[in-house]
Image 1 (cartoon, rainbow, N blue to C red):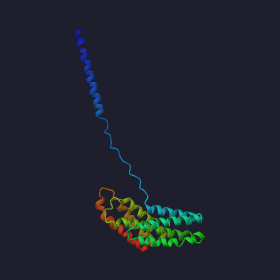
Image 2: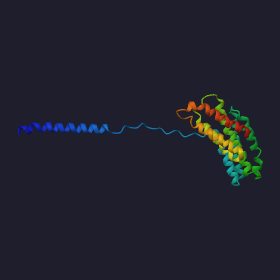
Image 3: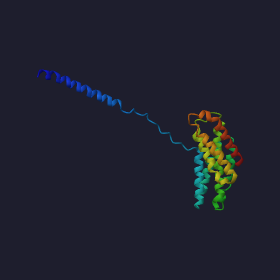
Image 4: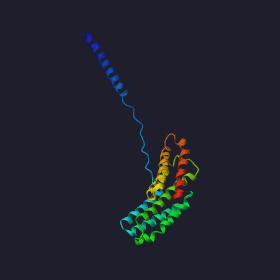
Length: 216
């Protein structure tokens, strides 16, 4: 009887120790917390994208027969394009102004309904291409690194690409190939090997701008 009284507390302590050790072991096997990931910030549309949107709205209004809205949209787009050209330092500033001038000449015809369809679409497409080329030229003309400019370069290339269907034929095919290669190169600027890819990307962008000079 005395033996049981002395041994029972020892057994209880032993069980308590084993239970505690088991609990710590279980906590030790919990998966480690994974680092929080950050969602990339959304790309803020550039001034060139804003101009292109105004002009697209004008073309849509013209297609729907709303001549008043079409003229208003063209005027808004022209004003925004001229404001952008005024602050540009690239080689395409004058080409942008030239295409804007061509579009401006179409306004009386748009107002009367004599100008619409493919004529207006092509004029707007050329302005958008000039906007894209001007944006790329301005970035290249700075002489600095392009590693932080992938979004703006992609936007400029997409503006150029969007105008290709209005060109048609061999020009559209050639331009499409050059722009696709440049887009592929620009996508590498944000990766680990971005610095190493930069010289090739600059060469690809130069090829795109040479193509644009021939078109504009």
